[in-house]
Length: 222
Image (cartoon, rainbow, N blue to C red):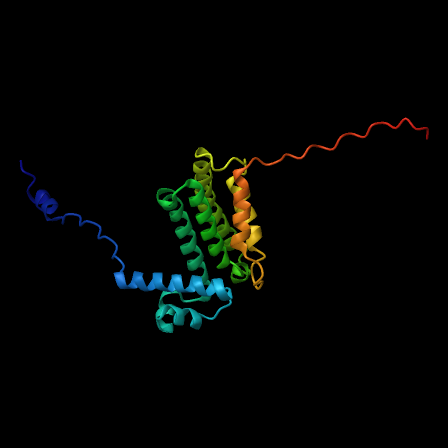
């Protein structure tokens, strides 16, 4: 017994088609986006995130229509720049360890790059006004990506004997961030020089202040 009509029906069922791969982005689209992000980062570093999108499109050498096709709103552009810079900083850590003459040189160069990145961050909170959760998520992504990178750089510098201070990566990244906070609109403040002084201090043991001695009881009559 061969199944007759039932087998014919089963044979007639078409074979499942493979799921098509999502279309790849055209190389010129990706190139335009990278050009816009790099230009926007420079404009925001110089003028803050309040800079006009026209300034960004001019710096990138593309039309306004191209900019808006990639980033329909200012917030979209600012957040994309922020994420782009985080990715660049994260990728730079291992690359610098592989190419710099010493781990300490890699650490210092990375922190200078981090300073430049923070220059694009001024005014970011105003872009997220009314969306505290979104701003918090972006800040957490910043810490999750960059603190481990700095920890690896510090560990390599310690292993080579270049760094002896016991400062942690989170503590250092916060300290550099606080120094950069004073940068805007102060031409007499060279934040890279100050960060270099800070990092150079990691090459020596840090003094541990002694607790104040307890007051001895006085023998004088009251």
